[in-house]
Length: 113
Image (cartoon, rainbow, N blue to C red):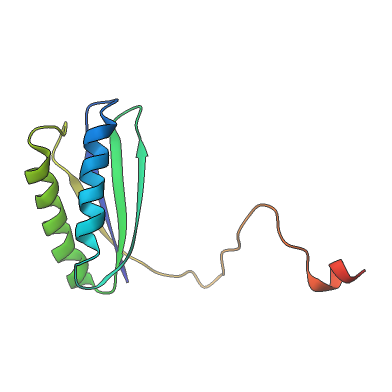
């Protein structure tokens, strides 16, 4: 599996442009070959918006990066502060399982006491 991180910057406070572009990407990404899932995140104080998408193959992630960055460039019509930045990562699972933090549900033995 591969992850594609695409970042864009709009004028601080211009969440309407970022929302419109993100909704376009959300619709577009689902139709691409090899798509697994996507998460969007932002820091609106600085106008920074990003999408992290997961792909079944490196080739799918590379093609998606080109298409989605092109979509941002053509759809932003000068509304972004800079060109979108895109990075490709290979996903791996550490041998040591990562356990969630925070409140945990009690074990069956503990709750039975």
